[in-house]
Amino acid sequence: MNCCTQLAVGLGALLICGCADQPTELHRQRIYAMGTWVDLSIRAADATDAQSLFGEIEVVLSAFEKDYYAWVPGQLAELNDAIHAGEPALVTSPLAALIVEAQRLSALSEGFFEPGLGALVELWGFHSSVQNPQLPPSADEISAHLDAGTKIASLRIDGQRIESSSRGLMLDLGGIAKGAAVDTIISLLLERGIEHALVNAGGDLRVIGRSGGRQDERRWQVGIQHPREIGLLGIVELQSGEAAFTSGDYERFYDRNGTRLHHIIDPQTGYPVTHTQAVTVIATNGVTADAAATALFVAGPGRWRHVARLLDIDYVLRVDASGELELTAPMRDRLRPADGVDSDIISPPDEDGAD
Ligand code: ADP
Ligand code: MG
Image (cartoon, rainbow, N blue to C red; front, side, top):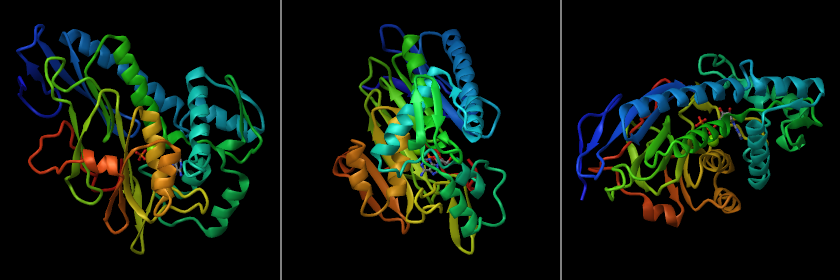
């Protein structure tokens, strides 16, 4: 039986559960970080605990913005400077661990996920939501960047010491950092004894427990947004620990003679992918889900199922360039029509293409 009454929706909303042995409340907070709104919903015993957790999470997110984003002064920028100078660099162990994982997932995805293409992302102007260039780069500029080296495989990683055999390499963790941030926040919440939470970074999210708390059977219901309309493609129910991440062509883009040029780049050609509108995956952690959504987006028709198998991803929903849906069989079993079903999140695409 669902004993919860939804009192309000949005910032600061509370879901109050009155029939548990120890009444618990769902506390919500919204923090702007990493170019998106991060919506936190956690079930905590009291409001003071929740507020102090929100404060800790804000600090975690600020660190991610500084140290995992290549275009502001911080650890990743320092590493890229060292690579450019042909020197080794020392990074913190969490960043080293993420780079090791990024390298592993890149190799496993046969290079469709390629966090070494930062220079190309910058050339196209997709590193910033406010600096979209008026013109796409020339074919010569693109091939010069491809020749200079865009492969994370060129990194040699020895503990926290990292160097590259390719001085043209520029790391961009934009395709995996949100997953790492969401995982870090979930680990922090578990360490602090929180059993039920949803961490939603602009539609990329992970849950623990159940939305109604221990006494409630109701699992977290999350909406998968439509890539072209304000609304949902469907709703999935997530098991505790699962992450659902989407890569879409509606996040950062500009239109050029009717062609949508957006922020996910095919590492083989150096051009934005045109065959896919969106890919949503469900995985057991945020890092894998984030990298896999990007990899399958790039892999495209004829190849995405093969890459999903390589990455061990069972649940995939792909929307192709014409808006047709393709699903793996396990995803088809889980996806429910959005009509008439309440979801715990709804995040429609931004109309201006900015994050
Ligand atoms: P979002 O961050 O918008 O949710 P993604 O997780 O797919 O979407 O990440 C896209 C970002 O990843 C781009 O903005 C860029 O920084 C980087 N990127 C672009 N193409 C690739 C690629 N082929 N492999 C890895 N990262 C990429
Ligand atoms: Mg991604």
